[in-house]
Image (cartoon, rainbow, N blue to C red; front, side, top):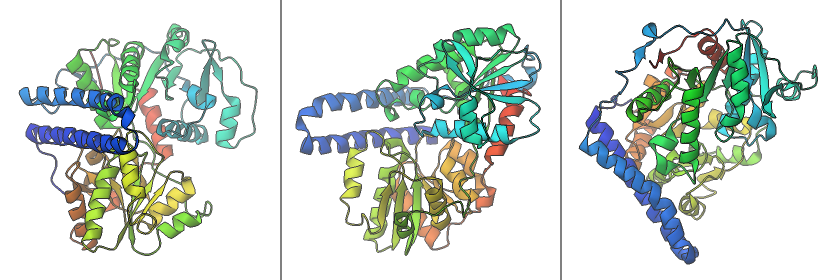
Length: 467
């Protein structure tokens, strides 16, 4: 199952490997453009090179001054945190503004859907969940949206919401570009001795700027700075992200609300149960025959599709009869990877890519794979590890902190961005030399995720507080 990550020297080595990976990714993308779009080379080179240079500067700083693994020493322990000044809560208001306007089927919106369903399905929460959206600076109920998500008859028309004493407003949906529009709603909540809690899905745009696209790092940072000042609490989707936030606020000396609480929950991992529908013929065909390894996630550089493809290319050259299945929509900066995949001799034979798969197809894939793959170098949670474990399947993961948090002793690990290490782990797994018990993976249901959110946001079971 692999040793736990070593100290600062190991962290430096892994960051250097990530930089090398990004430079190699740049080279591959530029080679592709040179063949097909020569006129775009210089503009694209800047687009790729800028974030790589940012990462390179960060690596140089890291090599010059090795920080402690955790910068949390200056953060007050939860027992020393000041008690919340909010009144007792009777309602949990859950922002669903973005998903009501347009469901883009993103990872964040998947969390929003599942949490809303879980909260409304629970009969004894101790508080009343109310899905809300922002309209003209005021919060409205979302009766129509709730009816669709829960399967209930719509009980009333959407209407302006009157804020009540002690209301907790959970900013669960993506409000990166619209956070300032909630100012008057925040003021109303505070006037009624309520509290505002923002959800943090990851810090990747700040910690790994080269993994983002366009102005995402700037937009995310503007949102983060506003959320730190406006929120009474920040709830992250893993303890790792919560600790990264505390360390980042400390290191950057970011302004924040006095006594800012920081907590976390784990996403649910229960996907569609067997018998919930019929999978597509293409999915069934991909998992018939040789043992198949499954990688679920949007195609983008940090997800490690190139690492997986290189590892399995080595396995095929060595005579291994295995399949590699990608499920995930096309993302950014992966043209070269997709070209390599779709032009590969094994594509359609032992290499497959499905850019659209519903819960039934996904459930079938997990049920019929030999193991899941998680070769990312940065994540906020690691949902495929938990989803695979829910279906009794192990995961082969990059050795990064959040995967250790989720996978624990129930997953197998290989060195980040090391295709040969992954190939060897697959060989060991197939030969029975590497084993793991998926039952030891963190794998909550969405119901448990919802209950945990209520415990943190309503019952103040926070991890710690900023002074």
